[in-house]
Image (cartoon, rainbow, N blue to C red; front, side, top):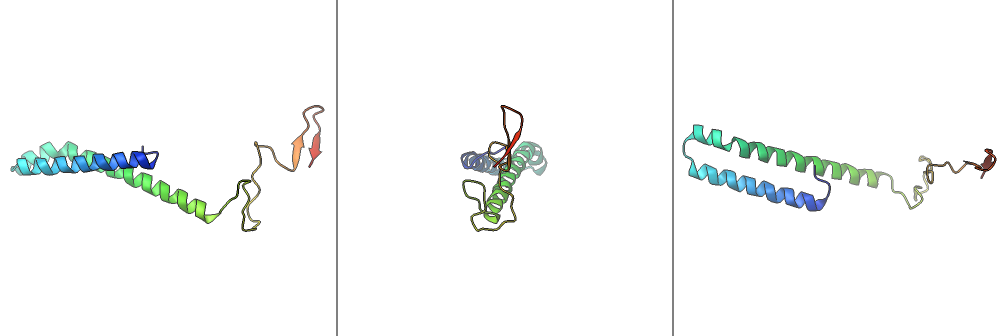
Amino acid sequence: MICNDEELKVMREQLGRAERALASLRSEITNERNFAVFSEAYVDQIAELKAEIDAYQKAAKKKTVKRMARPRNRRGRNPTGDCDAPPVPRNGVSRKCVPKQEFGNEVNL
C-alpha cells in the first residue's frame, strides 16, 4: 500500500514500465492467442498498480476534504468560533474534571 507521495511517484514509474513492457510484447508477438497468454501477468500487474494508485489518491482526497471541512488550531478548537465541536481533551483527560492522584478525589477546574 502506498503511504506517501514519494511511494506514489515510484508506483507511477512502475506502472509506466509495465505498460511499456506490454507494448513491447505486443509488437513482438503477432499471434493473438499467444499474446493473450504471455500478456496476462502484465495486465494483472497494471491493474493492481492502478488500483493502489487510485486507492491512495482517494484516501488523500478524503483527508484533504476532512481537513478543509473543519479547520482546527493547535489546541483542537475550531478557530472560526463555531461551538458545534467539543474540545479535544489533552492527554486523554477531560479539562472539566481531573482526578487528584493523592486522595483519589476529583478537582474541578
